[in-house]
Each structure stands twice: as C-alpha cells, then as structure tokens.
View 1 (spheres, rainbow, N blue to C red):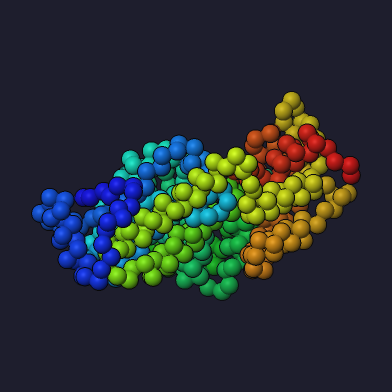
View 2: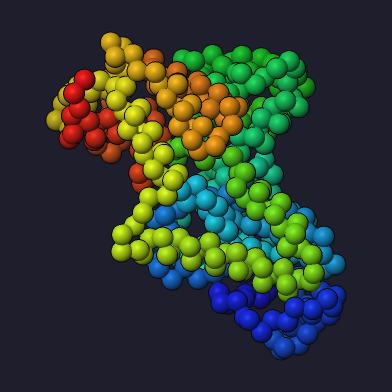
Length: 381
Ligand SMILES: [Zn+2]
C-alpha cells in the first residue's frame, strides 16, 4: 500500500500516457516491484482546531472508476458548520465495493487524521452493506443512513404512496405523531418484505436512531449523503486523463477545501458567511416564538407562545428562499416546524434540549436559543 504525502508534488508530469505506464514508472521510482492494488491518500490537518469546524457527522461513499487499473474510489467527506463539503480521504482500489477495503480505508483515515474527534463523530452512508459493516467494525457504532437512499428503498418495498408517512417519521419531533407514522408506514410494506425482514423494513421498524431527526445522535440538517455524492459526480471530469493526474486533482481539491477553511478561521476579524448569517438570524427569529419559564435553577420550560402566534412556517420559508432552497425543501420540513408549534414544556438548559438532538457550534435548536438569547437579552413583546 502506498501513502502519498500531503503536499501535492508539482513535478508530477501531466501527459497522455496510459495510466498503467505511469503506475509502472511510479512503482519503480518507489523501489517497489508490483503495481499497487490499493492507493490511499489524505491531507495532513496541521491545525488541531480545524476539525472543530466540521459537523459531527461525516459521509462515506464509494464510486466506480472507469480506469484501466483501479475500479473503485472510496471517499470520506466532512461537512462544515457552514454546510460545505470537505473531502478528507480517498482510497483507490482494484476491487468492487467490499467490506475488507472499506474497513482498511476507515482504519487508515482514523490513524492519519488524528485531530478529528472520532469519538463524537457519526458516519453516514447509503444503504450499502459493505460500508455499513466497515463503519461498525472501525467506529463500534451503527452508521447513520442517508434519508434519500432509504426512501428510495422504502418505495421499492411498499405499496401505495409512502412519502408523507416517511417524511413525518423523519422530521417530526412529536413522539406520538412519529409512532403513528411508523405504524402506518410498516403496514404499507409488501408481505414478503415484512416476513423476510429486509434491511429497509428493519430500519423503519427498530433503527430510528439511524435516520430520524428525533432519534439521531446528531442534529440539524445533515440528513443525506448528497455532499459526497455531488463530489463523486464532479469526479466524472477529473477522471479524464491518467491516474496520476486524477490523484493530483483530488489532492488539490482536498488541500484547497482545508486551506479555505483555515484562511476563513485565521482572519483577524472573522466574517460570517452568508449561510451562517442566515441560519443564525433564522434561529433567533424562531426563538422569539417561544415562552420561557424557569422550572428549577438552570432548567427552563419552553413552549410555543400561543398568544403571540408567531408564523413559524412562513418565517422558515422566507429564510430558506434566501438560501436558494427549493420549495420542496422547506415543504418537506413542515412536520418538523409543526412539532415546534405543538410541543409544550420542553425541558431546556443553556446547552441542551430534551426534545431536539444535540447540536453543534452555533447550530443550537431554537429552544436553546430561546433560553440563551432571550433570557440574557429580553425583547419587548
Ligand atoms: Zn429543542
């Protein structure tokens, strides 16, 4: 196995020779005898503070490489608190997507990216059994499941139109509503999918912590592996040429993403990005919808203020429009927003909420923002 250093070597030639010739040259240059069947590369994250800018969920995905030698590329990508995808590590190998390579990939990633707090990081994947098994093996926890992939499989195994039940199950913070949606959805499964207990049925039946807003260990809007898939589809263009060229492009992309993050966070006067500004303003706006009452020292009851009747759904939609989200995006969050309105006496401290999953950084749930912001800086109502 080879590991490339973090610095992209500017001397790597760009030419049109076959990838295989280049690999042979590289093999000889490195004093090896066999062309490697596996190639792992990741940048060194020099600044230990940088991974603090990642959400506590990362994405793992594999893609097919139309290369004469390597057949599969595995990628682990982080997502920043600003919702940008940062490719962290890649592995090329000659086999298909399988448990052995995926396990080796994650093990190497964990060793080389030592500043990442792996203990508190969840990994999300599509429903690939190889990837799920590898994640469990290396991180000793269940992987999260991409909502879009899961829904595609739900459609395959059910009769009728499962979207609204599935969406309620994923988005609502109301336990009763969630149970009703789960039951209705399970009833829609074909008898053979139920009896055979397909992985999809099992997830809907007993693994809600892998994909629902209410049960997931990490919060906010990381609900699909879209980020890493977009990255893989943009690789279509990078794949042209030869393998060394391709590795160079990918390494540059990794370094560029990390450098950008580094620069942003080392400014003397850090600026909010548009995304952060919008999300922060939205959280503050939503927080004004709640009534906060002291329950015991440091603990508050937070409820939707019915007298004020703040238009949560309308406000959310306006902010999402500003972010350029399509109507279908904010409509699909309706169940979540409705549950912000119907939930009463949510128990909240300055850092935690009994209802919403733990969030990171400035992305606190509106209940926590209500306690922290509005108690310290009360507004005239
Ligand atoms: Zn909350």
